[in-house]
Image (cartoon, rainbow, N blue to C red):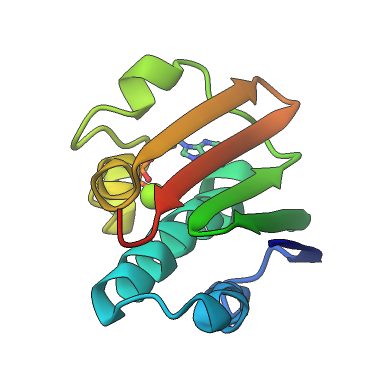
Amino acid sequence: MKNRFEIEFSALSQNEAFARLCISAFLLPLDPTVNEMSDIKTAVSEAVTNSIIHGYEGIGGTVHMSAETDENIVYIEIRDKGRGIEDIEAARKPLFTTKPDCERSGMGFTIMEAFMDKITVVSEKDKGTKVTMTKKLRG
Ligand SMILES: Nc1ncnc2c1ncn2[C@@H]1O[C@H](COP(=O)(O)OP(=O)(O)O)[C@@H](O)[C@H]1O
Ligand SMILES: [Mg+2]
């Protein structure tokens, strides 16, 4: 059976926890393992945090998140209409960060890659960023 949801929320740091709760509540009926749930929540958190702190750089805006499940496959999309990423290939490298003074570790994309089966990043300068992630449960 297919199932999906779509939400929008303000680009505020308190909504990182909200996004994590949403995805976990949505996935609960699929009975993921504790590790799977934790991995997905962490990946979502990294993407949402990026939209908030890099995409909108504290100026605010709207973060859009949607997810779809098809049997045991989970698709998640997180996008913003923020400043965009100039060099996606560089941004995805471990330890790359444009905010080294902000206690960021530059490991967000690396974590998303490690915890999900596949991630794609589409971004355009001053237009925004879309991160798509897929994971097969009990895969
Ligand atoms: N949604 C986004 N909008 C604009 N820039 C982004 C976005 N997501 C990631 N980036 C860019 O990619 C870099 C790497 O992201 P990440 O791996 O999560 O590391 P960190 O967030 O610690 O800097 C960020 O420093 C930022 O320059
Ligand atoms: Mg990050």
